Image 1: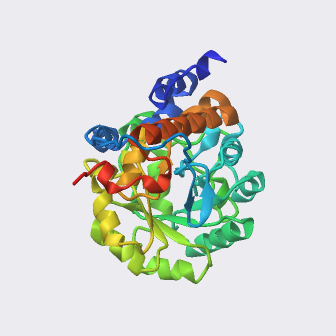
Image 2 (image 1 turned 60 degrees about the vertical axis):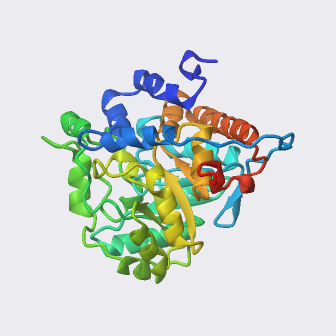
Length: 362
């Protein structure tokens, strides 16, 4: 095993990847907004939840598989939409989607991908979803949505917590821009592919301020429904009333997310608000969660509080940086093994056995 791949849990990955990555790329992937309070809280909040395990349950056979939007996945973990994978590895999003398929789960491709959706879809061997930002140029957005559906993606994930981008001070200090040769490939055809380093500040923040539509309202869901038959999930929800509005507006589900602590600092940790969102949706859509997931026990806690599955973000990028497709596969396999162990020790041989009593016993 190469030294860079010598890790025994996902928490060790970040330091290993930092030694491998260019400093600007590492800071872009790792950073949160302002004081990074929410970034830290996403992780810390899991440690405040106890698992009230069952005993004397036959766990000799266990199954980590579940379904998300009706599609079977090998575990309740999907790959979160993260941008600019070619900064981590030359194969970029192609390596990531191949790893997702090989490990039996779904990748959500970012709008800000360094590989075109058509090329990623061609390399996929499992379901591919697409994360969407709505541009001020609605014609460009419409064209992209139609391309996404034509490419064979199975769902749209609409990000709604970024009317502007949070101030990520590491990016400001580094004057972040894409390295030479890399572009926002999904928007090149519409004239929005270049993201260059500025004289000062963050090039990504400038790009978002110039390109994305900050006037987005719930009416956008109805508009998107006129463009595609794909199910639409709303990503960036931390409030019960917003979750209710999402499903009332036609969403197939929501992603409880604070953008990995990268938008409004001091926003709540996602696991802390999950149960309220689940109660508000009341079974009318599927609930996913991201933010701070690093252990199999984290996944079990999210399931117990009502999530259908979780999304894994930064560890996928660290694995990609350390070993390309093989690195991502090792990350996913390691997390699956931890989920299996946690299920055995909690007395829950199947995902369907995980209920709220595991974290909130009567």
